[in-house]
Image (tube, rainbow, N blue to C red; front, top):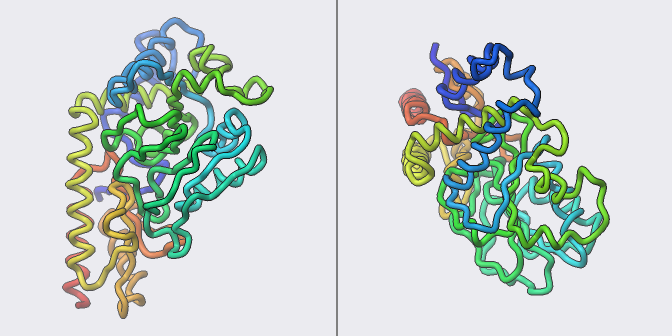
Amino acid sequence: MKKYNFNAGPSMLPREVIEATAAACLDFDGNGLSLMEISHRAKYFQPVVDEAVALTKELLDIPEGYEVIFLAGGASTEFCRVPYNFLEKKAAYLNTGVWSKKAMKEAQLFGETVEVASSADTNYNYIPKGFDIPEDLDYLYICSNNTIYGTEYKEDIDSPVPLFADMSSNILSRPIDVSKYALIYGGAQKNLAPAGVAFVIIRDDMLDKVVRPLPTMMNVNTHVDNDSMFNTPPVFPIYVLSQTLRWLKAEGGVAAIHERNERKAAMLYAEIDRNPLFKGTAAKEDRSSMNICFVMNDGYESLADEFFAMAKERGMVGIKGHRLVGGFRASCYNACPEEAVEALVKCMQDFEKMHA
């Protein structure tokens, strides 16, 4: 039976990337060694990192004056590294869910941390708007897409202070104006690679603003100065990341994948809104194109387990919603094909015929 992978992360990767990686695990670049056993100092691995940096800059249209590095770990380490490096007096956080709250908790260890806006009043089902941004901040921090609640920033914020963003779950899924950000980071296990590597895009002027003496490994300058090679990098996920970037370029780049993502999201949201058995959980204007959350409609709550079982029987994997929201979540990252969304929509329609 064909499987349709809707896992929120680690998530689906393009088949071409998996096949290329499988081949490299047996013989990397014709060198007779597995990707999993080569030295990161080997002359044939440095081009992998260089290509990943170049493709990231090309696909995101990153202007001059920015660095791209790859670090072991994921976004959770950056929750700490960011304020450790850059919070001297005061930082502001937009609280849109679990991940921004976790980041804010880490920041409180290093300086004054203010919550400029929050959507906690309705269980984070919308993106706050119309808030004031103080001008005495070291930085303003956002999480651009919220995997648990299915909300997403649709436009880049105009900020009078350095804007930092956790883009773990929607990087390279839509065009962004990188020049509006001083720092972008994320774990790669949503749209880029398996778990184990984080990406960081940082504006050069921020490198002079590190505010305190730091342990060597926590200082962002360490990794910029050493081109991600200060210590042994996560070779395997960086290779997969580079292959995913190749795939994305071949698919037409970010603009083309954005159009595809919007078609997928529109298809599934249209069915959620049409089908009397289901309802969406996020405010319509803030609905994520990456993580589509829905529950059984009023009066049909008792059917949730039955629908989940039916979806599972039809090959749907990973559609169970997060415990903080419940219901269902279809994560439609870049590699998710339209065929998978069509199969889920058909399942919902057939379930309606059984019960409506």
